[in-house]
Image 1 (cartoon, rainbow, N blue to C red):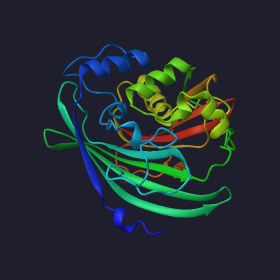
Image 2 (cartoon, rainbow, N blue to C red):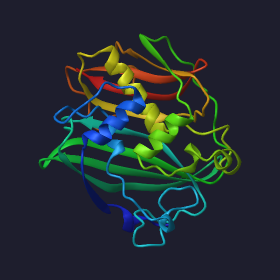
Image 3 (cartoon, one colour):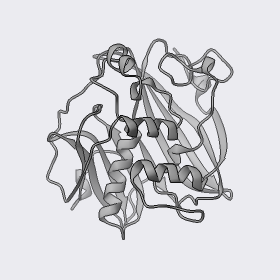
Image 4 (tube, rainbow, N blue to C red):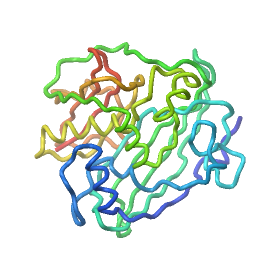
Length: 292
């Protein structure tokens, strides 16, 4: 199937980065109170800019329906399960709470491949965030659509020694709140029968974006004087509640150990940290942070 007509397609959403919504994120993630004029913490923009589609425009999994209507941004890939695989960020400037913001999303690539689990479609979306007509953040998001097969629930990679570690144990309420904040209708996060019987997970699935958020914020809590320049992350396998895990990391002595790619080349005077989610000694998610 050819997807050439979709490459370059774009859509935009404008929204106020409101203190009211921000306070709900603070309560969900255990963050100190923020107010108008403060910087929005990294990755919290995911809790804004979501189109409110009517239920007839949603697929069986609760996500926007693929193809078949003028409201469909992406083509129809058939009967597939959706996974947020990873992404890359460039942090140019911080978004400011209390100001209008514009998000422009462009389809950058769609590639169909065959794997051991059947057909796979890899979609890369470019998200750009603007305030006062200035681009503040550039994000590439990787999404995988795959034929319905049992998901991977264990790790092949052992977690290395860490310079820092913080334990998390999100529960069903955490997942409900994060789904509500991101207006994410994906049923694997709140519908236990669907998650376990239809998509064959062991329980309700912890959001990949939430795990990515835990990783970068654990690093920034440990090194409060550091500034994140770029962030690259990916999921290796799903985590479900109830599960306890740790967000961990270490600063690299050499960038020759890099495993993920950034959007831009590394700055000359910057450093890089590896971060990961440690579940029972294995890596479930991993990432890299360029910082100064």
